[in-house]
Image 1 (spheres, rainbow, N blue to C red):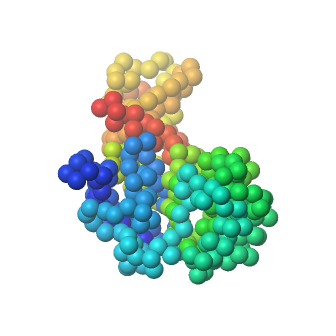
Image 2 (cartoon, rainbow, N blue to C red; image 1 turned 135 degrees about the vertical axis):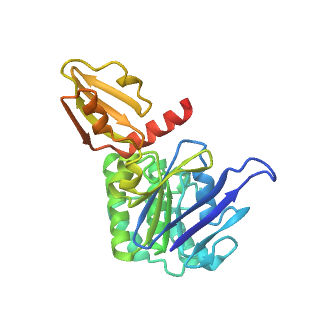
Image 3 (cartoon, rainbow, N blue to C red; image 1 turned 90 degrees about the horizontal axis):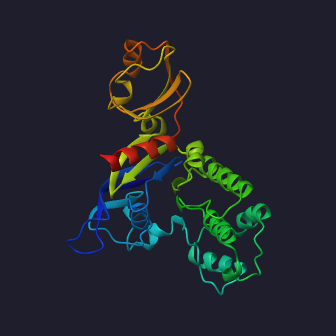
Length: 294
């Protein structure tokens, strides 16, 4: 299990922290989504989790062991980075040998089984591969090393629709079969929503929302409301309404707040008021839009 406990990291001593007091955990066999706008601290946090960066305060543990400066712990972590540059003069087959030497659990057979799907030319130098090919190569190498924790930063970047679907399907299979703990950071929230169990939504170096997917989505709720006689004065000015749209007399409201929205709309004369499904992307967009406006 991965445990992140009250982690703070600054790049300049005494400066503003890039991340501050971050805590969460990822259990074996679970997929954790890490989301947030650019500059929210996601990449810094990922580099701390993978042991690339040290931390100023707190601790990060994998199976009870600290990760930074600990080769034994790092050997259990697979990291699919967004840039995926590797050694540009190496060929794909050279990367296989490199990973075999670095990771004792590396299974070449599993790598080649995955490559039957992703079809990366292993005799071509890494520097001559496209961004999508580099991402697929990195994914296969890290899957084949049999990690206990798999961390992926924008793993579907540069991939076409079919390759994205194949990659995410393999992640889910890995979680189910090997009980791997997975962290995925991505801007493609529709894809993430389909597979993640828990979510941490970051903003300006801290945590905005966190919890089970449904708990996070419940921070902003969507309602479909019918006002046949026209919308009453003052409704659109309600501070709980973060966004709305309408087609004729049918309004769709995004509502943030503890007040009972159904009761509110009914009291205002709504002919129909019901809660409908909201997407993770809508929660993300309107939470951060309201924060900027506030």
